[in-house]
Length: 184
Ligand SMILES: NC(=O)c1ccc[n+]([C@@H]2O[C@H](COP(=O)([O-])OP(=O)(O)OC[C@H]3O[C@@H](n4cnc5c(N)ncnc54)[C@H](OP(=O)(O)O)[C@@H]3O)[C@@H](O)[C@H]2O)c1
Image (cartoon, rainbow, N blue to C red; front, side, top):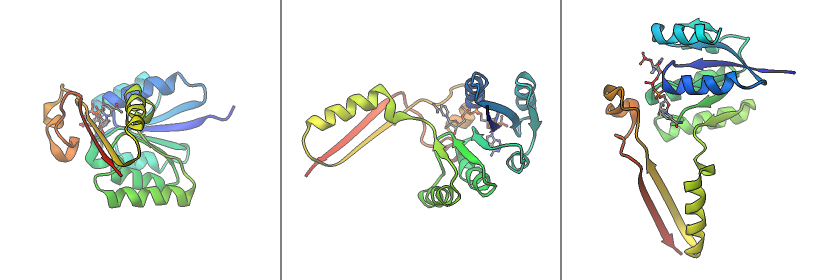
């Protein structure tokens, strides 16, 4: 069986979460973990019998990696996604894809040009909340626009990250739903 060879960047909560999933997949092989945090990075790498790399650029340059999973803080996603696609890797990135729309459009185009998979977590469109809202909105008639925003809590254990706007985005609130619908 051909397996997809994975490299993970970051060694925090989401990296650990994805590692647990990939470890359970017969079709995936974890090759390396890159982390600027040597303590958590090398610990995770040892736990999963993967190579530890301190610099993420060295991970995406490896020829024995097909796909990169990006689990760093928000402000670094755009740069890493771009570099990974330029190195012809498939990419799974934690949200957001990038810090501004222009940078997001560049990487979407690049993925298409190079025939790479670019997937942004997380699959909100399949959540029960999303399905229920879609059904309810459908009952309102023909709409010009609907916009739905859910602000979720970040990780409380590191407030210096959670409340740092460039790194974490909008300060987290606990499940605030904002729903805007405009009729034709
Ligand atoms: N899909 C979901 O449901 C979900 C849930 C929570 C979070 N997220 C997203 O997942 C991402 C990671 O969140 P997390 O909770 O895992 O954070 P975390 O526990 O703080 O871990 C982030 C990891 O990335 C490293 N890192 C951060 N910026 C970096 C950079 N510029 N270069 C190299 N390494 C860097 C950190 O190193 P240090 O230890 O040195 O800081 C740490 O190892 C965020 O984008 C967040 O929005 C998604």
